[in-house]
Image: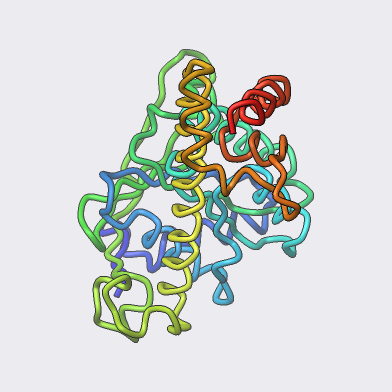
Length: 277
């Protein structure tokens, strides 16, 4: 159940406002803040399903380039969730990408009309100018299924920002009416489940795994860059089977791939290995 706006008793005030903004072709950027694991993305999807009953996991993105693809491919009026990107890209890059996504939304809204929801831990992680002047609403999630919506208004005469309470939201987890299991990852049916919640959790898990692998490669590359040539030779000898091609020859490309070093250093290492083996 969704209970909204105790003062005016308008049901449902927030989703009605979002639909109205779409009709008027007004840019709509909503930040959803709250501590990690409290259900920010679930809140976003629950709200957006009310303005787009066909909302799918394909409308949840983690990178700027994926966002731009959706802007081009989605029919006008379809919302997008740019989901906690700090988990999948570096902090500095994330800082810039979130700001760029918001700017892109504002610039393209009169043509594409895509409401944008961004779940983040804290709005201070976003560029100050962007969050002050290009965000219209902030949802603060206080507990799983409970949040408050605030209207963000920048003064046209001073640097003041007003954030009056707009309404309260009482929302459960995604598909809570179909599945009572609060944790998808522990469910035996998780891999084959077609509920939107499971699709989202699988997509996020996949992104996380890619991120971990990329970080591992970065760490490995840094470690090998910091090694002396003698240390590199010793390490290369321990993994020599990974450094040879199908003909059994030491391969420069494989050295670069496995050790994360440049071509010149890889050529020197190959020559030294051939001398010692």
